[in-house]
Image 1 (cartoon, rainbow, N blue to C red):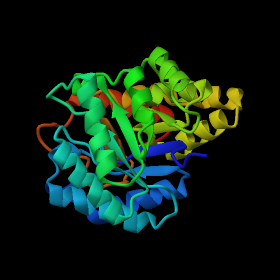
Image 2: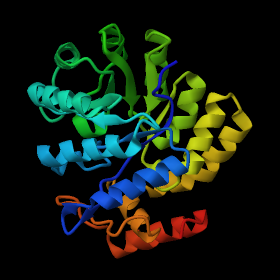
Image 3: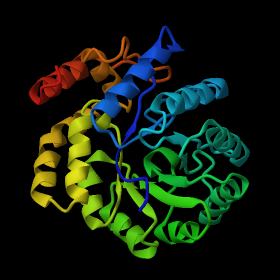
Length: 293
């Protein structure tokens, strides 16, 4: 059975005065483990990896692995639109002791399906660590098509995919074409429950940042085939899932954690900006309705 199973949190990176708040990150990780989160994903999109230096990226991965101390799997973000850079970040994640890496499909340079295949294959051949593909066309301007995923599933070391198209047709085709031991994780909170019911293994979640216990419980119920409980939790969480995208991710999640008193500052790094007053009022209303503040 795959270790990439359940509710993995795409954890935010707290910053104080523009610098990584290391104690804040440690405290967040402990909060997640205490609340049943099944795995930690540092340096993903939600962790603002795009605005981290390599030194900061390395430090966050190292600190996460050290703090988790093998209590849950750590899936470190190591993607880049440069294959050489992706290899370097992946090699560092392995040396740091991560259980696997999450690699976003190359963004901006818009490779062909063959280019995407060769990119991932090159990293898998260079570093012996489980790789989870990350397909998020809304950010990369390209889609890893199911046939390409199936080809990649045959490459040793490529263990699964984070599927963030929001398209259950594509999710179904990926599951149909890939081996049974290939982990298919939802990349969108709102498709996490149906993805598991279709045969997926879990979610890499933004909402888990602020409601880890309920997200983990929903995944546990779905994986156990308890549809009534999974559906109940899905609809309880659904307005909160929507609220996490009132502004560009991770702006709402970080502000929520600040309002909950979990981090000192919810400020993102530029070019992301804090949400405006109107959006903040909507967010506070959603959080109050859920009982988080």
